[in-house]
Amino acid sequence: MTTPVTFGDLAGEALAHLRQPVPSPGQVEDTAAALRAVAIALTRHVAEARATLTSHASTNRARHAPWAQAATQVSEALASATACLAAVPADPSHTAQLGQQDAAGSLRTAATSITLARDLLATHLASRPDGTRTARTGSEWAPLVTSPQLAKALLYDLAGWARHAAAAASQTAVTGTTRSAAARRDLATASHRLWDLDHAVRTAHHREPVTLAEHQLLHAISARHIPEPR
Image (cartoon, rainbow, N blue to C red; front, side, top):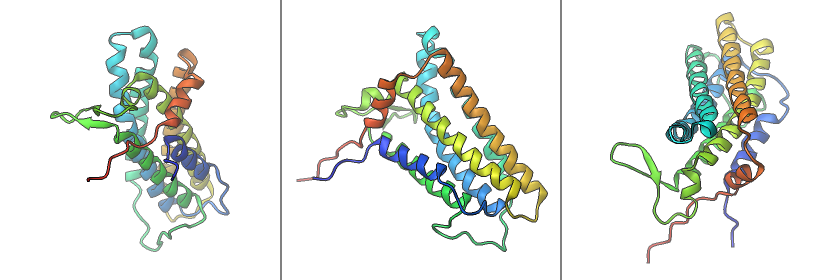
């Protein structure tokens, strides 16, 4: 019997790709495109976490307000980073290669793992007519997936991904190849916005720590089993 993939498996894969040393920093424009893919994947995670925390902060402000504030700051930092990266034009003289051993390759692979982690959580959610998400009936993980405890733990993981992505991209901003000083500057600015994101989450964690149990529960979540039709 195949062991089901968990959120922790995918989160670990993303972090491993972001942490791994690369032989060269690579090309600035290519790295900007790859970092933008990471930022977009992170943004999709944050949207639901922010909605959950904002809702619970209205009823338990002392406990959830620090994280609701952090979620707002994270959203703003990602929007700023994405805008900076969108301004970097592609270099028509350069073609990205699948599995390339540079910062862009690591970022692109990590973005895929981050996206898959969100898709895994989404198997426990259903859509309302207004487009918002709610717990899916029949899913044993659904109450946790829609809880503020998971939202906090998710933001904590997200900050780690952002921190390591920023480190990889900032190296390319300094030493990578490019014909454009503006592209180098925009990549550096986007990296700093991701460090701002990390700082916001660390501040919330200091005020209202994510517990080891909360983090372990998040990482234990597996995709909802869908029975095969008879």
